[in-house]
Image 1 (cartoon, rainbow, N blue to C red):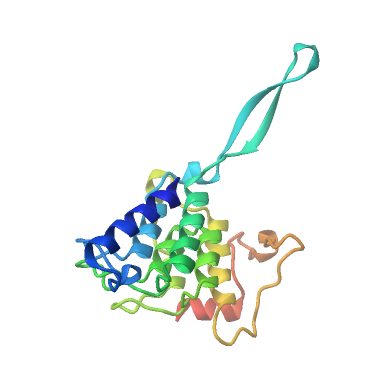
Image 2: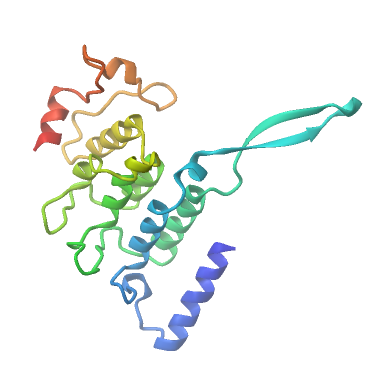
Length: 213
């Protein structure tokens, strides 16, 4: 339904402005390009809904009911990942196009996802061609954005593990690529191995230098 509405809207725009109008790089009255606006929408969504599960009552023989946890059918993250593929592949939206919103310092979309630490979303955007080293006009990069507050005061922000996973993902996509992070067989990180003697999660000496820079 979401993609259907997007297709209808894109068709209406092209009909109004002509087939030569480039929808992929267009931006709204606030200066937000399509892909950036989609990333902003995910960041402003209810984080708990993006990671929650729903419990349904399933009838079984004999009249007993059994509770079964099932992944939520459509979370904000699910919808975003679908929309992202549409924007990147169907509309050919540039993954590095920054926002032109006044006061936002030409922030690229990767910064929004990195700050919110949606690892799957960051990974999908990087796979779509986003530059992990792209900086805004103040020199901030996506890696630096993972350290910024993102709803923490309202207990709706990312966990420390999500921040570390996002930072490691960005580090793995650095141009030299020689110092990749080892993961488990399921692709997850063992955070217990990353803690120092005081219990703080660390990346490694070489990667901490990259963060500090």
